Every structure is written in structure tokens, then in C-alpha cells.
Image (cartoon, rainbow, N blue to C red; front, top):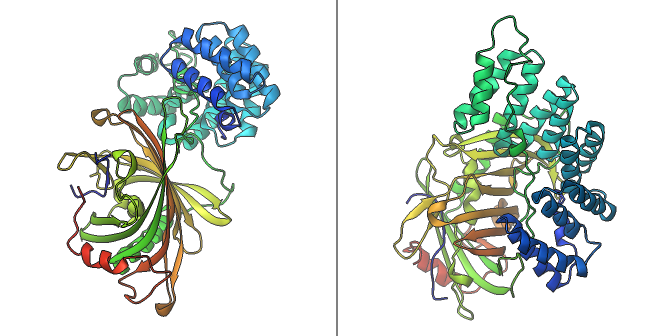
Length: 513
């Protein structure tokens, strides 16, 4: 397989409002809350209530406990108690976005639109980058007859949510139709049903618009079809171990600052191309902290590894790279914890290599900041019509490889156009190998090699969250003591142990079994 590979091999051994789940709770209470979450996800409501009652007895004033109790009562159709618990959640955390949005949706169902708008506006104020907040606000405004405002909010939700928010399109189409823009509504629905042909409600909505007789009020179709917006913007149950999905929230950017996507991607690509050209291989000291996550979202005892780490990167034909990695440690186990080996993290920036850029749909979200550095925020997603050469999972010594389509966001420095941070998620789960979560964050920083006056941006840290075959894990990698061979063979920055031995061995190195 030509893709850069993250091997999953068997070896010898909130801004979303969900952040309150991470507030300090006693371990037993965390476990009860985790069990409640698990039961709610699989609709085992009696079990969920039992665990929630146990958690409530231990932490009655905790916003996460109260919010989930509201979700439980919502699922058993007791909206009065659900709203009571969500209201109580806001007493303990006034900016709990999920509670604000849940209350807004509940009030919409009761046609209490003014109150619903008040709560959803608070949610937007608390988290302006929440696409769900803007989508729900669009729904409220449309029901209030404020069509122009609803259209604006729906468009903004689609911009913020990228692939996750596509289900807002039927709501946007309804708003456009009711405002008299039948042509725009048809265009939106045709695009949506082409991408999601199984949405029967949207298909019915499109058919109704297409058969409306000329001269009739386009806003008042005979069937007045419902949209799929309610299911599209349904609030997710918060995770107590995963960070937010990259498309769940968009970090804030400066308004009215134009961004030239082509220029940003081209200049960032030149930096990546320079990196591949200048670097035949590099070595570093790598520290790994591994934590297994149980099914209730609780972390186990951490395992620590330290490696002498060598990487070689070569482009053997346009868009195809050999990325070889070698790890060794004479004083500690060299295998990865849990029998799962992670590879390919240093090569994520190759997404922006000129040979790869066309494989991704990209958009510039605007000018943001990361660690005080002004940076362009660029969203990317693997195109289904282009080859996926970026990442794959390989199982077993000689097992098959499974390409993994990624979507994510990069922060690109405005002065140097170096990538300072990347964050990715799966485009979709891989049922063949039961891969349900792959959330990765890599942060880059400058490493200067003084004798040749060369500065390269290399990975400083990487975090990976994974749910594969029922095994959940969180890993943090950190890199230091870089040695950049092809720039200057004699250059040393706190040279790693056994570097020379690793250098000799990598010449014949393939992916390790």
C-alpha cells in the first residue's frame, strides 16, 4: 500500500456544553455517569435511570448529571421533567450550550417561540461557532416568519458545520421557498438529495416544489412537507472522553478579513514541499503516554514509553510517499501498549503537499490564532472521487490495509505559511474493521539547525483518540532532541541515544511487523 500508514497491529501484548462532564467528580460518580451515558446511547432507559439516580445522589448539583437526567426524561416523553432538569442545569452552569439548545427545541414544540429564541440566542452567544446553535436558531426564526434571518442563519450553520451540517439544507430550502425563491430552494434540494438519496422526507419536499403549478404561492405547497432538519440538528450525547469533533465547533475567526484560499494552500504547499525536499530523514526522542479508556469513558493507569525514533520521507512518484519509521529502546519495552502500533503522525502535513492538495476539498474559514500566532484556518476533507493516499490502517503482520478518509482543520501561520497545528477526524466510520473513532491532533514548532542556518517546522506533540474493535485509547506523543540528517549530518541538538545505530539500520528498514 502506498499510503502513509497508521498500523493497528497485534503485538506481544467543552465548548459544546459537554465540558462539564470533565468537571471534578469522584471516581465512583464518574463511573455511574459513564454507565448512564452508555445506557442512553443504546436506549436501555431503565438502566440509565438507575445509574443517573446513583450519580444524582452523589452529585445533585453537577450540571452534567442534571443535563443527562433531562435527556432521560426526554427519551421517555416526559418533557415537563426534562425541561425542569435542563433549567436546573443552567442554574449550575448558565452557559451549558447543550442545555440551552435542548430547552429551545422543547419550547419550539410547545410553540413558545419567543422563549425558544431567547434560549437559542444565549447558546449562540455562549458558543458562536456551534453550527447546531445556528441551525436551531434558523428553525425558530422560520417558525416566527422571519424568513430572511432564517436563511442567513441556515447558511451560517452550513458554513460552520461542513459535512456534519448537510442535513440543514432541507430547512434552508423551506426558508427559501417560503421567501419566494423557488429556484434557490430547488437548487439546494437537488444537491442535497443527490448526495443523500435515502432521505425520503427531502425527496417528498423536492417533488412538492417541482409540481407546484405556476402562479400558485410557492411558499404554501399543498403538502407543506416536513424537513429532515429536526433529525439533522439533533443534539449528540456528550462524550466524557473524546474532544469535540472538528466539525462540531469552528474556532472563532476575525470577521471581515478576506482569505485567499488558493494563495494560502499554494504557499503552505511550498513549505511542505521544501520539507520533503530538504529532509531525507530525521531522528528524535519520543515520549509516549498511553491510557486505555473503559466503556464508561474512564481512563486506566497510564503506560509510558520512551523511544529513539527515526523517520525517513521520500516521494517516489507524485502524490505517493514512502514514510518509514523506526523505534528502539534498549532499556524498556519497544512495543506499543495494548498491542496497537501508531505510525504516520509526522506525515499528516503531507495533506498540503502540492501533489496531494487536489485530493481534498478545502475552504478557508478565516483568520484565527493559535498559541498567539495569527493563522489562517483551512478546513479540508478527502474527496471521494480522488485517490486516498494519506492514511490507512493495517492489521496483522501481513494483513490487508484499509484506507481511511480524513477531514479536518489546519492552522497555517500568516507570515511563514508553516502549518502550526492540524486536527483530523474520520469522514465516516469503517465498519469492516470496527473503527468508530480516530481523532488526531498534531502541533508543530520550529527547530533551528544553526550551522546551516536552517529552520524546519517539525511535530512537537501529537494526541490520538481511537475506538477500534471495542478498544478505546488516548495517546499523547511528544518529540524532542531533533537531528535532521540531510540538512547537516553533524548537526546535533541534545543528540538522542543510539542515534548512530538507528541511522545505519534505517537504510534497509521497511514497515516493522
